[in-house]
Length: 169
Image (cartoon, rainbow, N blue to C red; front, side):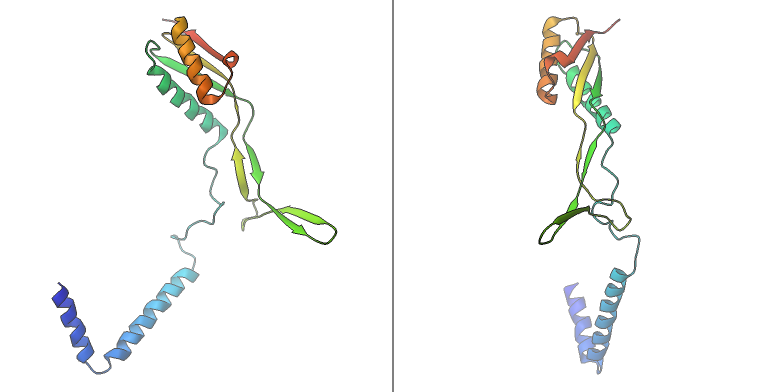
């Protein structure tokens, strides 16, 4: 394959005016690259910060419940498990600020994106307020204690805000 390409290159070099043709093709290629950058297209990436939020508070709550349920099922004696989590409030968003300082005063304004929305700097998800677990082994004090300790250490929720109950059969 290498011989084939090198043979073609040598044939082009031997032709009169091939240097001008190569220069013209190179210039055309650079022009196409420049035009592809200037023209808006479907393949251009969105500007940073313009994407939708990664997840909502409800999705966050649902994912926490699902992951906790999957983990608790693996505790010996827990059995089939259902988990419910309550959150303190909705998510809190901190927006980026631009500070302009003068000699006697300073002024802060929100950084705005091209579409007029404010640039999100940090999004805090709501804190967990309480956790309820209903499982087959919830009536066993040892199983309930292990589940309570697990939830308390994972979510930093005090034990008095965690309730583990026996599942009805």
